[in-house]
Length: 587
Ligand code: ARG
Image 1 (cartoon, rainbow, N blue to C red):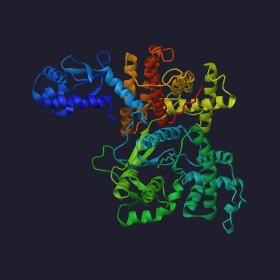
Image 2: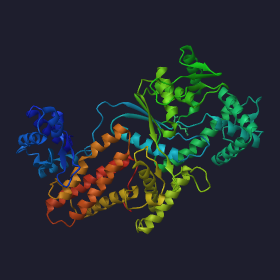
Image 3: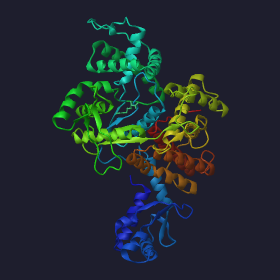
Image 4: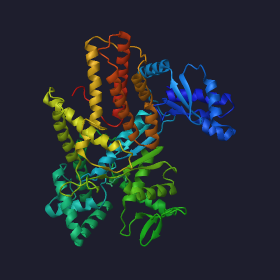
């Protein structure tokens, strides 16, 4: 379906062509002076340079070409030669009916769908998640929803951090506590127990305990490093333990991510590609992609035109172990073998920019991936009120479950304060509070362009006023209630006729959906979806304030407004779903 901007651009382009100027000059946009007219075209300014004529004369010639065209009620020239367009009411009506009749309310699909791998979330086994992981989860989930909706085949992978030093720390900490477990007996060759020897609480206790000991005691750190190397080399008991740790962690993570409404297709981790590493390293050595440097094997990634020198990627450390970059390279190979993505997006904080630049260059150099097919989708930090990285009151990093629960509790309080949901059964009230809490966290994160840092102010995020997730849910619920009342009165939506300015303004917003999604898609930036749903909700509010629906006496006008409300609701819910928000029926 062509949007109004596209229809106008085509028509105005033809007018430019008719006076022997390039058609592209007819590109129209929504106006940045909506007080003058809702749409504009600045092509005459550029045409003036090409044709060496006054821009105003060109604008006049274009306007003359458009005279009497049914698309426009008015074509005006402002200033030195800006063309301003006011669409005809019938054009708004026709467009509104087309959007209302479309399953996707005007949202298009990509022309050439691709297979896209999205690597996001990235929590580490046993280590508590922090807000960086939360951002990655929220942004990555929105991107997977958006890309799928636009027609790509998406495979998402949580890419657990389960192969590094932290595993060595855990293994050795458990060994110190329970040395008699069979996992630590090197002579043991029986079957290991199927039940994990630890709970998630044990892991959450063991890891920080081990980490702080290792920080202070070099011998303790060396023990953990040795265990890490043994684990990676395949020590049987350690591998069995690692499996348990991963199982226990995944169960806990699944609970948290379910509560947040974030889904992953694959729950793979760094450890899953371990078996690919020896051959990969050998191949890199054989082909001269890797070279020796101070006892380690590295891949040089610096390029001549670099502004800042990029360090080589360390493939094998001088102690013989695989590092973060090594598992990332092996993962690229694994994904190539199993998914063969056209594009891979890594949704990871911008602090890891150099790491990904190294990995991408090494992968291209080795021919593991096609140049340009790997993208780092960077994001900034979440800060506390002091402007520094967000910490808990105790100084540690936030746990995802705590954060979700805090938002949930505040949402409950806010709902009570606002007198919302009082007549819902308790279960349902709590379900609504969860939706509000999640919406608060997600929208606050996604509304900024992803590289922007923001301050975590839960109180503001859960407010039903302002540019917040809860405000949007509230607006959706309000429209749902109008639709229910209409239904109860036996009113039906009908053909849309645009009479009032506020109706035209609402149609313009509805019509901007596809462009907003296309922008979000191109820039991998969900903030454009947030911007759209927010402006749609606002346009609906203004419309509703000046155009009564249920009390309207004229049946055709009432049916038209009801159809506008219904279409707004459909698009609002669709837009919200693309940023991972869900509106309840009532609140
Ligand atoms: N586990 C990593 C971290 O906590 C994030 C993983 C990102 N993905 C990747 N393929 N490296 O920093």
